[in-house]
Length: 329
Image (cartoon, rainbow, N blue to C red; front, side):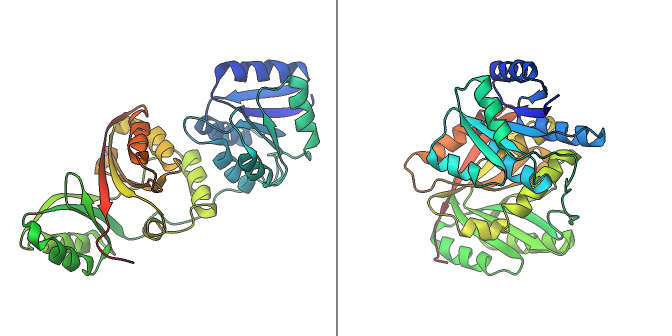
């Protein structure tokens, strides 16, 4: 046997053709239709003492694109040969892939001999050694965090109320928005009791109507996916969500996504890895996601993001609240 190859591609015909072709060339092949199933396969193989000698991954997939998988794989298995394949690549994407250690690139369509040649050009490696679990870290948030949405009953006092809310201790972000409510606040405190006290204080303010209060929850993900996201967060999304949001260019919006909570893992993972999503939080017992998205200033861009989110299986409704810039940073 030449080696054990893991293939990730969302197209069934391509998975079948690559599996048959590489098997005929003397490889042992396992094929996965998406990133999450590949994450599970790598963990299961490791626990069984089975090592993969190569990874072949497409880039554009329904849950996690191949370049993001590549980032994490190279942390877990730095010497594993990875071949990135795509039918929609360009020079910039190729350079991004090739910048990773021991990684090759192949444009579709190609023949099996081309694939074999590309694999053989890479330095031999394996998942059997050097696998690194995510560093032991505390929960995503050590303190209690929650969202508060409010309406302002007297529009003439909007700026006055906004300024008062903005300066309250415990308020991490305070954004004026255009949507079903007027302001969304992200608050953080050492305990839920202190969060409740802050929100009670806000509720007593004149001309302020509290629409909702939702504590942020840790998403219920299985061990493999949770570890994958943790590694990605540590190596790529290194800035706190509030800081990252402030650094984004273009139009910004909050999104509130009603979901089938039985499908939270697939939905949360898919939304988390969408490039235009700055951050994504779980609220209301796993029945809703709150996130921030950026339109990069492109006219009509935001509706396309909302449409993309709406097409994810298990997403019931997507609402948008566009941020209104009231003060300069």
